[in-house]
Every structure is written in C-alpha cells, then in structure tokens.
Length: 145
Ligand code: RB5
Image 1 (cartoon, helix red, strand yellow):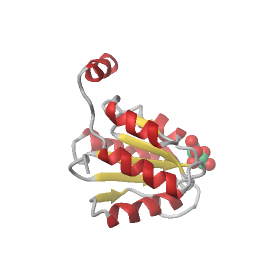
Image 2: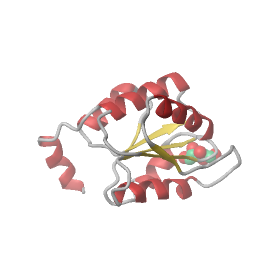
Image 3: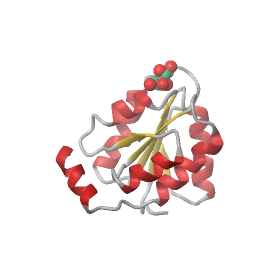
C-alpha cells in the first residue's frame, strides 16, 4: 500500500452496504482503518459522517479517507469544504489512478447506488496503491490550496 498510516472510512445510509464490503477488503489486506459510521441503512445526513473523516486527515491522524453516499457526490461536496482535503468522486479506475498521480487526492468518494462492489474494490485498490507524481502537479495544487 502506498499510503502509510490508517484509513478513515464513513458512509451515510446510501453507502452503508458498500462501506461494509470495503471494510472487509481492508481487513483482508491488513490495512488499518477506523469506521466512523453510519451503522445501518437508516436515513442520516452525509455531512455528519464526512466531518470526522476530514478532520482526522487534516489533523494528521489518518493518511487518507474513503467516503460513500448514494451517489458519492454529496460526500465529495462536503469533504472538499475542509481546507487541506482533496476529495475525488470516482466511478472508474482511470480516474482513481490519475487523481492520485496528478491531484494528490486524500479522500476517495464512491456512490453506493452507482458503483458495484467489484469495480469499487478495484478503485479502492488502485487509489491506495498509487503515489503522487509531484513536480508540475504540486505547483498546480499549490495554486488552489
Ligand atoms: C441520500 O438519499 C442521498 O441523497 C445521499 O446518499 C447522497 O447521494 C447525496 O449526495
């Protein structure tokens, strides 16, 4: 795994089922993680679950995060409000690879109602195993950070 350190993961009700599958994948790969909820498919508010993940990354407790809602869009909007968070909504492996290489993304957002388990686990695998390229991409990031 490229990221050293722990992964913070959370979902709302629309992402709960996929979150549980990703947790099993992380555990199988012996990747340390903290689950910040939610714990069921009962309706809840996605920003409440984006908050502890993003705060934990910004304060250095976690190397990166995975946030899942129904579409992945609400979670990415909420996460990108936090200074220092670069959240990427991915529905394909190419985006997962290049958002690490070029954007130094630190939060992966997925849609539990959009992306099936197979592709989601491939996206997570590529995301966690791809390093940032730096160089001209670091300059570009510094222009919006
Ligand atoms: C919940 O119904 C849904 O709005 C939420 O999971 C997410 O998709 C929001 O962007």
